[in-house]
Length: 120
Image (tube, rainbow, N blue to C red):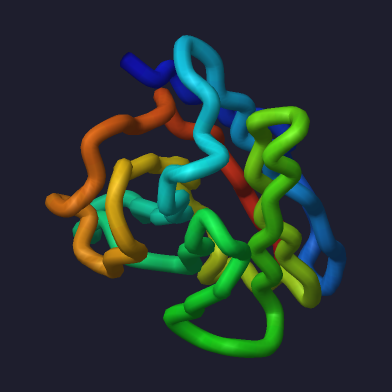
């Protein structure tokens, strides 16, 4: 079993940036594909970014999001820049012991979510 805990969210002003962290425990995630998803009120959970075990990256929209990982720390990061009010959502990290996927249903383990609120 893999346990995932997100941190780093909060209230930020539009135009700012923040870095979310996802710390894993229970097993090393060095061979896991990791993904970040978000869910805004009243909307479905959507794919944001993913990173393979070899650090190949995939994004829903390129430019403002950067996913990275530190396998020595079993931690994955999501850097978000130029934040917009529409980025307001609960951000989740997820893990799967397979190749990268964009579908939330493909992931086996999930964190509890971390709220990001962007004020205008």
